[in-house]
Length: 142
Image (cartoon, helix red, strand yellow):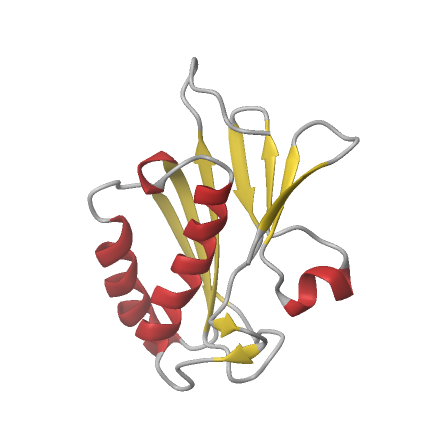
């Protein structure tokens, strides 16, 4: 499904095959030195928004897409140091927070939740970005 490509710029790029990556010219994640920085992820699977109307399940899916990119770059959930999520409705914070605790509760990364006016598709309730850091001495595959 996803692939890792080496760029002429430093680091490598991770691609998931998502519809917007090619259309809008971005990578799912970028390895930059000890960091893996993941683009915003939603509950879009095979080009379709899933779990319409369910912020909790959309969050689990978005976090899963992001973690898949982290793993393709050679890191793991335990390396995640920052999570940002964007919700379209104040009523969704608890559901997104519950999903975050389920996925990252043992890791305890920093976390910021932001309410936004909307996302690229009105069926999307949440979008998440994550960043992971590789400890010194651990190599990340390029």
